[in-house]
Length: 89
Image (cartoon, rainbow, N blue to C red):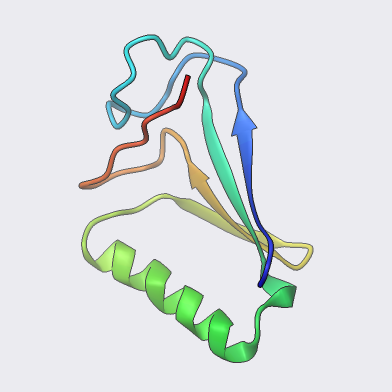
């Protein structure tokens, strides 16, 4: 199974635009979901791209990026739509 890494970014004020429910989020900036693209088969890569597209189609959007054989989903202030980012304590 490919690696899925979530990188906790706790550096500044919450910038989620109201998408997180936690009241005390003074240290929460968001998370980067890093998917090891190079470990996916071509079929899995297509599936992941389709999932991303379907999320956008239903109104869930966020910044994305790629590089170094990785795919990044930035779940931070850019997260929009019928979804909430709820930090754990």
